[in-house]
Length: 110
Length: 121
Image (cartoon, rainbow over all chains, first blue to last red; front, side, top):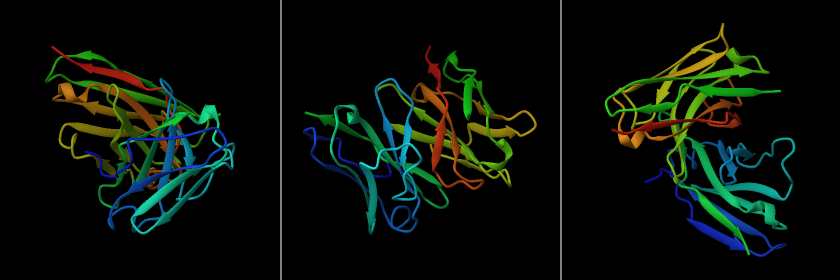
């Protein structure tokens, strides 16, 4: 059982937008603006897509955006492309613990 | 170019020990927090342990506390994970990951390729 809750799967058609939620508690997502999102293709290494809730590392497409409301963080991918099909994980700083991951969401591009 | 190269994985019997290493290059190693993150076959990511860059403070996940020890040698630009009392559920790919800051912020901007640890009799 993961500390952060994500939907097991989401899907969308090319060109559409999808949102993946990541629900934590007031001890992690709700208190700290230190949520990150990772993309992992099968057999590959996780890649940082969003950090500090909404910032994009250099080289990451602006189709990826992050936000937060209360104890829930969200990753939105707009203009869905076939190459976006992957597993996505959220992660949050959690004070004394100090790191918690979500269980992961499998994105299928139809 | 930032590079993280893990080594030391392999097969071990339950109750055994193993030491993982992560050789870092391309950045000022001592200035950044580092972590170990694992992924069991077909499962999600699990943070295992981390160490800050400035103070060397160490942190552990509940599942490994008391069994694993993280350390770093800044003179060798190397991160370590000493694993003991290994269990079948420790079987996973172990990734070394660099944090964005000297403090543990759980913002991992670079990851190694991983090293596989298999615990089985």
